[in-house]
Length: 552
Image (tube, rainbow, N blue to C red; front, side, top):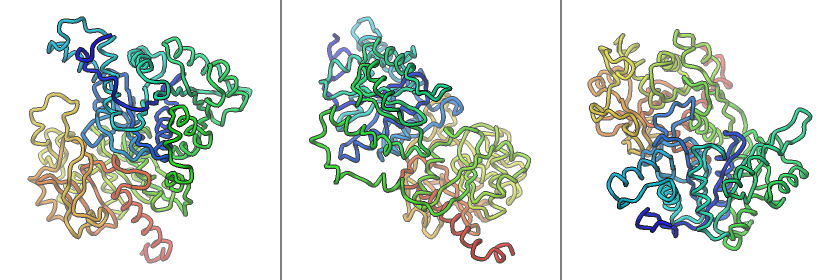
C-alpha cells in the first residue's frame, strides 16, 4: 500500500458512511432515496452531509447541456454541479460546497497536476493507488466533522467510467469497521405483462456489484407499487441479504413524500441499527416532525403558473419548479406549472398566457427562444399579469422595456446580438479577456443592497439579501438613467451592478439578476417566489369578489 505522504490520503477522517449505488437503469431515483435517508437521520438528531460522485470527465457540470443532464445547480461557493446536490440541499436544509461533488475530471486533473509538479517522486502514477486514493480523500474530507456522510455514486453498476469509484469503495470497506459503513443498492423491479413483479433485473445488478467485490447491505426496490412480501423474500434469497434489508420505494405523487414512504418501511431504523447509532438517536417522540407536517399540510386551492423556457424538460428547471412548490406549501395552495415553450411565443402568439395566474421567465443561455421570452415579458407587463424574471428573464425584461417604452427598436443583449446599436445588456467588465467557458462566470453567493420602500424591500423584509449568481452579462450602466426615468425601477444593486428590477405601477413585476431558486427550501421558501404567489392569490381573491369591477 502507498504511504500517506505519497497520495496525501488520510484514512482516519469521517465517522459513518452510507454508499448508494444503482443498477439496471439510470434515473431510478438514487438521489431522492439517498436524500430521504438523510432527512430521516437528520430528524433523529444526526448531523448529515452528502457527496455526489459523477463519473463523467467534465470537471464540473457548468458546460453541460440541460437536455442531457438537467439543470446546472449552483452552490454558495460558486460550484456548478449536478442537480442532485440541489435535492440534498433541499431535503437536508444544508448549504454544500464544490468539495461535495466528485467528478472524474476533478480527480484526474488533480492527480495529473501533482504528477507534473513531481509530487510522486518519480513513481509510476496509476489508477490504483493514486486515483482511488484521491477519490477516497475527497469523500473523507467532505465527511469530516459530520455524524453521517451519504455518498451517491452516479450512473449504474457496470458502467466503465464508474469502475475506479467502485474499486475505491471496495478499498474503503476494508479500511472501515463493519458498523461504520453501509452499502445501499437501488434497483428497478418492473412489472411483467401479466402483472408480476420481476426480480431478475435486481438479481443481475447485484451479481454485477458482487463481481466487483461489493456486497450490498440494503436493497431498495423501485417499483410502481410496494414490493409484495414474497418478492422481498425472493430478492433476499438470491441476493444474499436478510429479508428485512429489502425495502420498497414505490412511485409517489410528490418526491417530498418519499421520506415518509421509506420511514413507513422502516429504512431509517434499519440503517441506524446497522451503523450502531440507535443509542445516539433521539427517542421517537422527540424526533423532528416538521417535514411530515409540512408536506402533508392540506391545501385550499390551486394556481396556474406558466414557466416560459426553451427546454421542454422539467429537469432543466427543477429548482424553479421546486421553488414554486415551496411557495405553494407556505401559501397553502397547489401550484400547477404550465410548461410554455418560448419558441411558441416568438411571433406574439401569447394565447398560452391568457389563462394562467402568473408567469416565470427563467434563466438560460443562447439565442434560441429569446424572442418568445421577450414577448412573455411584454405580455405580462402590459396585462398586469404577475411576473417573475430570473437572470436571463431579468435581462430580457430590460430589453423589452428598452424596445417598447424607450422606443430603442433594436435594443438587445450583446450576448445574443453582438452588433446591436443599443446593448442594454452587455458583458461584465472582468469577462472581456476570458477564453475558457467553464467556471469563469460570476458565480456563487453575493450580497445585494436593496432600496427601502420598494417591493424587493417588502418581500425580503430587509435592505440586503445574499443570493447565488450564474451570469456573464449584466445591465449596461450607460442605459440605467434612461430606463429609470422611463419608469423601470432598479431596487437592488451591488455597486454599479443592477440586481433587482420592478415596476411600481404593476401588481407584481419583479426580476432578479441572481437565481433565488437555488436557496429555496421546503419550509423556507424563496421570497421572490412567495411574493409572486401572494400577489396571484390577492389578484384571484379580488376577481372572485368583484369580477365586474376588475373587468371594467
